[in-house]
Length: 417
Image (cartoon, rainbow, N blue to C red; front, side, top):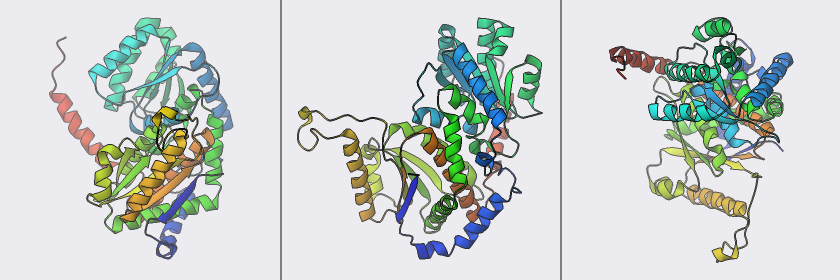
């Protein structure tokens, strides 16, 4: 069983989608051609460097042997994909380090607490940055590296630092060469938000005890399937047509809390790929059933500027039976069955007021299906961006806020403390 997509409640029929299929097909051909900048992720699952994968798996085992805490330093595409996988997927049997993340915020409180924790643990760092100059990870790496050197000494600390950066240039690559860190490459032809299946995502995921080989096989199955390409194209066409009809927000709804960071990764993937030139869907995420008690009223009767994409896990990892003390309709029932009843009930209520709904069925939260899911959404995002007439692989707006941030940093005096 593979991931399935249900577009029957979008209000867009096959005949409607057929009108845009030639445009979607041209986008697919452009992506498959290998000539489009930053489209290296398209062929990646079918062209895995097995020798490099073995080196990465060896590094992950050394991380597991050295430490009980791995701090991954990165922001945006440099950490969200790994965090999505580590949060969503169960680890294999064995002892694996706890994975914490840093460098994705500028909170002194957060990083001070992390430094306190590092004093008590056996620690490794995985720093991910193509340039080595992005503010948040640069600050965090400097702090955490300093603590590591103080704790272990410079030589031992270097054995506990793993870097993923540009192959030949940049501040971090220079430091790798100078200090002798184990390093892996951020591919030149793959942007950060499309990099989950490169060392950017795979090294932290493997260190967490998750089967990255199975993940790559899932992505390969998706990449090799014409039917999957058509599913991604149909979803992309539907998203584009819904935007054209006035639905400017895509609500990504999920009923398993494990999918929290999958939704966060999707928000970056869709938002950064499509949101340019005054175009794009605004990606939002809601965790059901919790958010039904805060946003359910708006969804049912508020400003209908949105459609919903519902992520359903068909076979959740575990289940419990509700005790008799719950009474009424609940006693003796499977909690997962109740969760499914909530999902079906919400879809029925929202469909009754003509909210367009996409449902994506994930058979189970396993590495194999996660790989499929990543590739499917990457393809969907790229095609949607092309249908909108924007470049789905750049982010000029991000560079603009960074320029303004640098100006503000220049105004700051040194800390007297």
